[in-house]
Image (cartoon, rainbow, N blue to C red; front, side, top):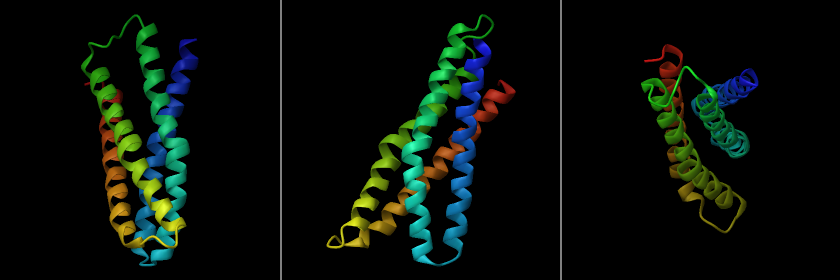
Length: 150
């Protein structure tokens, strides 16, 4: 059973971390091109993916991580690397769920409503992009703690 829990924990972390890095690369490439329409298209696709996949993967990584520690006889929550990983992953989930996702939703509503002014969209997109940078950084630091067991 432990191996399956570990497998799903690692799978969810891989999806979350790998997806975050991939999104960073997509947004950087779209932003460098100077084409605002292309950037908006990528942003909308990334926002939908974030809502559906990354939020779920983040929560799953934390749940399976707790489960692993709970059934393990040789590690516990008092380990500094466990505490750091949980804390950083939880902050990343909170940033996604309560900061980035609502802003992505506001961008979607503004773009779908032709009567609303789209002057807030670039600012919201910058906020979401910054939140994505924060999430990726937090996940990288959490991964370092978990791999090297500081």
